[in-house]
Amino acid sequence: MLTAPEPPAIPLSMLRYLFLSIGQLGDRAVLAVLAKSLALTLALFAVLGAGLWWLIQALTGKWLGDGAAPFVGFLVILVVIASMWLLFRAVAVASVGLFADEIVVAVERKHYAAALERARSLPFHQAASLAVRSAVRVIAVNLLLLPIYVMLLLFGVGTGIAFLLVNGWLLGRDLGDMVAVRHLDGKGVKRSRGETAGQRFLLGLGATVLLTIPIVNLVAPLLGAAMATHLFHARRS
Image (cartoon, rainbow, N blue to C red; front, side, top):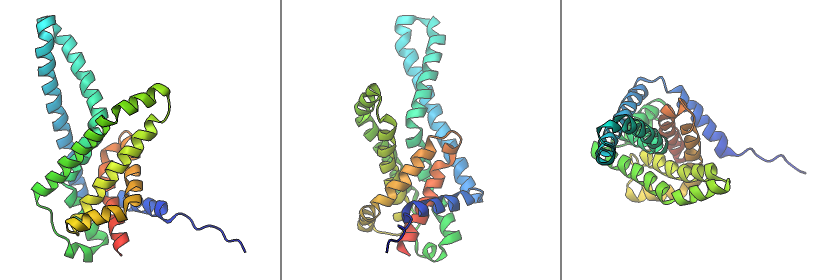
C-alpha cells in the first residue's frame, strides 16, 4: 500500500523558527541590539567614506588640481555605494555579532529558560573576535571567488545562485557558532558544525536571501541570530 511522503521537517522547522523570531522583533532587548548594530554599521561606512574621500582627493589632486572636488565627491559616492552593496552583509552581521549574546539571551529567556541558566555569557573580547573573524572570512572568500562571479556574469549563468550558496554556507556557520559558543566548549563547537551542517546551510541561505531584500535586510542578521538559537535548542532537546 502506497503512503504519502512525509513533508520535509527541516524547511518547515525553519519557517517556524522564522515566525518565532519575527514575533520577538518588538522585544526591548532586540530593539536595543538593532539600534546599536545599525549605528555601528553606519559609523563604519561613514569612516570608510571619509577615508576614501581623503585618499581619492590626494591621488587625483596631483593630476586634476583643486578643481577636481566635484569629480572626487561623485567618485567617492559611487565607491561608497558599491562598497555598501558588496560589504553590507559582512559589516551588518559582524555588528550584530558583537551584541549577539543579547539576542540569544532574549530568545532563551522566552523559550528555553532551563538552557539559559546553564549558559555562559561571552566576554566582549570573545564576541568581538567572533565578529571580526566572521567579517574577514566573508570578505576574503568572496574576493577569492570574485573572478568566478565575474566569469559567470559574463556567461549570464548562475552568478546570483553562486553568491547565495557561498554566503549561505558562510552565514549559517557563523550564526550557528554565535549560539554554540555559549553552551559548548571548543571541541563541542567544532563537532556541532559537522552535525548541523545541512541545517546551518538552510539557515544561512534563508538569512542571505533576507539580506538581499531592502528594508528587511536591516533586521535580517537579528532574525538569523534568533533562528539559530531556536535551531540549536530544538536539536539538543
